[in-house]
Structure formats: structure tokens, C-alpha cells
Length: 496
Image (cartoon, rainbow, N blue to C red):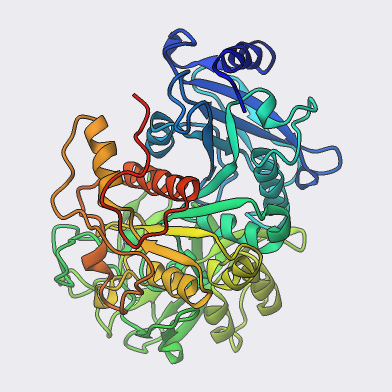
């Protein structure tokens, strides 16, 4: 444990030897510090190293006496990530946690403050085995079980409380976080909590089978009447919810070998869609090109602000290097439905698709996570206006429902959204009142399908602050051992 004198010396040591930078040019005593280290990992290849950045509270800003809990941040999206500091990370540091970010193998990020390019070694495999192995070693570094490339444990230079380590998964990063725990659970048994923000818990959610935000081409019209006018791009061929796999009218699937599917603005030959009127044609209106040159279409042919059963819906996809080439990866159910079609060679085969998704989905990971970490605490953070999904059937936020169903079925402690006291504290410290309608849901009460919209954060909330509130609440619960379904207030008085 750091004493106050030793802690100050440790700050000077890490600033001098680990190239830490002081935020905003302030003095070490008044500002958070950023510390760059490299963590050895075979995820980055033989002799590989993963680039890691720790954001550390100012001296006197530690949450637990002379020490800080450690929060490992998992970047969303499909890219290798970077070492920038967003709203969630900034708020968590202000609340007294160390936030650790890392670049997945093969990724490079350029620091806008210095212009210096920082890289992790190895080959990026789109959140697969390389990324999960690298994530394991970064987490073990944070747990004090594995040194950096200088031979130092985290406690040698940072005021880290290694018995209070948790994960924050932003969007797709939540899949990587829980899949890493599933694969390496016994080696990561010290992880105390997981907070996930609007995670696409299954392959269908990750590729937008139920509904993707960009398909709502008239955000001024609330087509589905749920009060959120920007989420009407839902798939009208959805027929039923499942905790791991949802049902669709797969008999409507069609395929055009001359068409093009875009993933991250990259074109792939072949186009699959749900053919609403069964005419064998893709019925859509060309609206123009995106900034990256990708065509934008409207499938709302009758212009009523929502997709109807007689209208088409495109099948989305992921991309990954498989078998030595970049391939389009549909969800497993869609790929199975395409078995009768002569799909392009760059479309992943059914076995390749199954192998890809089996290690990249929260819903598949949770039983193994629970077996290895039965005391893991989890909060799912979500708002009424989702950042990516348009799938609000029955006002259900079904990607969140799948995660909560999986946590409940696995016997893990869970909560939909953070305690209102924690969110209010972060808002107050930022000089703003808590938004009207902020929920205060009880833990370990599984919401019925179709009720999550009423348990969501209001559309006006700051998502990064809610993510920080969830992480800090969970860190405090781990520190105090308090698992009450709801809290009367903060468990720990935050640092000044």
C-alpha cells in the first residue's frame, strides 16, 4: 500500500521513467497524470508488447484512502482502439479511479497532443484470440499479477488497489471484455465487476439484423411511436425474441450476386436482404454518398417514417481476415439462411461464420464467465436513444435484454443502469442537475421483455457520465461488500 510520502515519490518516478505527461500543463500536485507503459503479451506475437495508458487521479484524489481502484476500458467499434480520454474515462478518474486503456494487437494510434504514433505489436484479428490474449495480459497487469516490460508491477509506480479491478465495455468492447473473461477466467479471478454500455450481446445485434440507426432516414418522424424519432429503422421481418437468437421470416431472404455490401465503408461483392414484397428486386431510394463515399439508401418506399412488412431490409455484416483474406461475415442465422444461394467467395462460409461468432458474443460467454467468476457484479448501461441499435420492438432494447437474461440465467449479480445517487453525484460535480426521468432500478430483478424502455436513461443523459457512475458504483460495492438491491446514497464519499 502506498503511504502518502511514498505515493508522491512514486508519482515522480513514473513521470521520470515511464514518460507520464501532466494533463493540461498543470503541476503534478494539482492534475491527473497519464502514464504510458508496455505490457508483454503473446497476443502481440512472439516477444509482443501491448501499448497501455493509465489515467491517474491527482495526488489526494484517490478514492480509497491512498489507493485507487483500477478500471480497464474496452474500446467499442471494430477497430483496434486508441489511448484517448473520453467523457467516461475522464469522469471515472475525477471520481478517484485509475482508468487503463490499451491498443489491440496490430493497432496504431497517433496522440493528437504530441503527434507521436503509438502501436501494439502483432496482428489485429478483429477482437479474436490475439485481442483476447492481449486483453488478458493487460488485466493481469492491473491485477498486479504480471509486470510491464521493465519488470515493474503496477503497484511499483501507481497507487493501484489491485483487489479492486473492473472492466468497462463500451458497445462492442463489452463483447471483448466478457469473452476474455470466459476464455481466461481462472487467470482473471480477481476481476470484481463488469459495466457494459449498450453492448450488442449477440451476432445478430452486432451486425444490425434487428435494426440499425442509419436506416431511419427521416429522423423528424417518430414512426414507431415510442417517443424517439431517430430509431425507426427496425427490421419488419423480425418475428420473435430469444435470449441468444431472435427469429425472423428467413423465407424472405434473397441474394443478389451483382450487388454490393458495405462494411466500415469497404465494399464486398454480393448483397443479401429480406425481400418484403418477394419481387426479387432491391426496392430502395438512393439518397447520396456518405463522407467516406458509401451510398446511402432509404428502404422506406412509402415514406411513412418506418419500415413495413412489404418493404425490404438489408442484411448487415462484420468484416474480418479469415483464411488469408478479408471476408464479409453475416450473423450465423442469416448465413445459414443463405446456404442455398451462390454467395461471393469473400463471404465467410457457414463454418467460418460459426467459428468467428462463437468467441465474440456475450450471450455465449456468460456461462463460462459465471463458472470462473461467480461473484462478478455487472451493470448494463443504456439510454432510450440507443447509440447504434434501432431495435426497439415492444420498447424492448432487446440487445440489453439478452445481456440481462444471460446474467440472470448464469446466477450473476446484475442491475439495469446505475444507482441514481451515483449518477447524481457525477452530474453535481460537473455543475449540472440530474436529468428528469433518470431511473433508479433495483438489482437482481429481471425486467420482462418489452419493459426496458421505461428503465432506460432519458434521451438527454450524458452516456459517458452514466458509464462512469456504473463503474464507480460497482467499485464501491466491491470495496465495501454491499450488494443491496438499491442504495440510499453513495457508499464512499468521493475525493474533493
